[in-house]
Length: 174
Image (cartoon, rainbow, N blue to C red; front, top):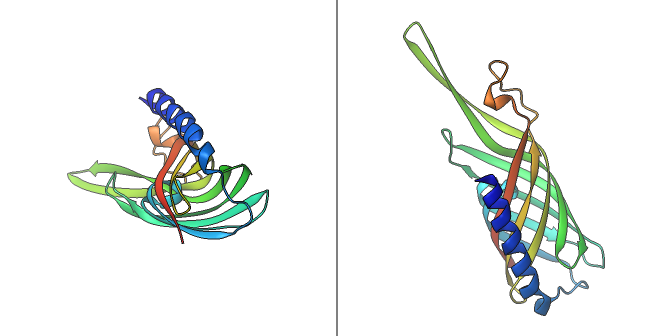
């Protein structure tokens, strides 16, 4: 399933790159954008606000807040810096919450449920596809590293530290 997701993402990225060649970015202007979508940058399903600097080599500073509905649900937040190195292609270094882990223990007939956030640094590679001067699509994929120790015992699936991550959202330049 993960391989299929990466293949589909790659195909979508290549086709969007071809379409976006007609809409080359204007490097001379800085801008704010508001995006709605899913992923690390959005805090799950949520909103992301970003400021992008002008120039040949641009930087984007972003923060997002959203809701991660799986494993009991939790409000998440993340922030980061995107470095644009060709057109709207960027590397995104970020830190924030990117998932939840829930475990249930039952001792002597008493059951307790505890949920914890997965959080830590992430590195994604992405592209902002703008269909016109104002509206676009954001697509990114990468890895996040969980710094929160949530393993219950050796071999527990939550003891893994590296998780694949994606961003997908609709962008509006403000």
